[in-house]
Image (cartoon, rainbow, N blue to C red; front, side, top):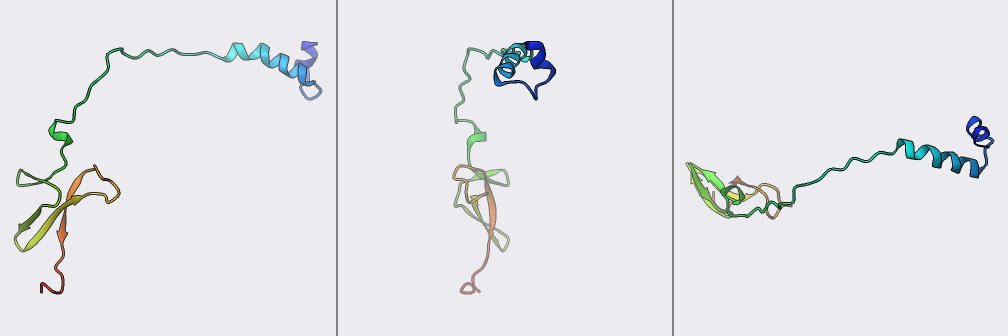
Length: 100
């Protein structure tokens, strides 16, 4: 019965197909086990890499800081508007018509 099922799957009934699948499937399935270390890694947010600051002349400025460089004013703000804890950047403040 199995030989006739394997020779022509087009004419094979559902039970022949199921039987041949059950016999072939265990030969092709292998599993690889990967173990992870048991000691968890604890990360604290006290390092300087965690701080959200803008740098100018080796000084750190927080969000909202305004700095005058020559005749240009710069504002420390979020690099991306959609991120609330992402990197900061300097943005040039444009003069308004009232200031001119």
